[in-house]
Image (cartoon, rainbow, N blue to C red; front, top):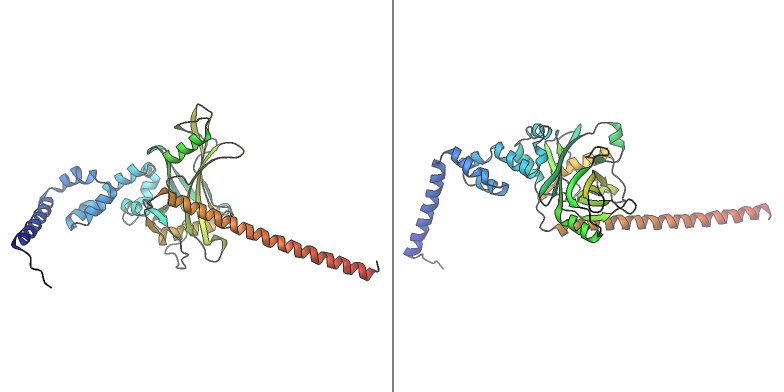
Length: 347
């Protein structure tokens, strides 16, 4: 059945098309300095990317690296560091490439057997920002060499702060544990961007919001954990791994809370630490083959964290049961051998 449009409907469609064409024409005829200064500099990343898809003229203006550099440094102040600026300048689309890699949450849950397109990096760069109520508490950039034997054979561990360094915050250290821990869970956030200068890729390996806030059982320091789960090597304990960032805070009741540790480790499904050599390869694959998606709720990251811990507990329990069974069999065999020996000896 064909429905004919009425004259009024056709007139409306024509007017809308003319209006759209007129708007596009007016933007194209506007001087690019006006568009850049008064319009594009006020847009966020998502709106800027959408604007770039409207027409070739706006796309040319929207891919300007200065716009994306301002967005990146406003989002992550650590990227204003000369070290990161130099590395980002070698990326295919510079700051636009970094933003598309680092802004959404990293999703890499399937082991990929495809070979990497670049060799292992000689170093990885960590750009770390800690925020309290959306304002940066501190920003730091750390270079980590990945070719030394001490790094390759040891557990992957990156520490951002210097020994005995304390970073003050605006948080007051209160006596009530529940109140303090809940406040930190709601108001503290962290970004940990890893940059691969060789592969010219990056990824944010932080859950942004804490997945767990707790007191250390011995020192009573406050530990805030951020975690991202990713795929590793198939049919091994590293088939699924977890990058965990730990922020340790200390202080006296009534005074300011101080950050004294910000570190990253990688754990496998047995609860062991992944070596530097294997960890770098896993991170490379996650950067190259992993998807970047937005996470709707903070609870989703907490659920993944809890699920990984459950897998670790189950594997440890199975390992303990198998070991207990082997010990039982060994004791029976030893007893039988002892009885047989006594029988042959005539006791």
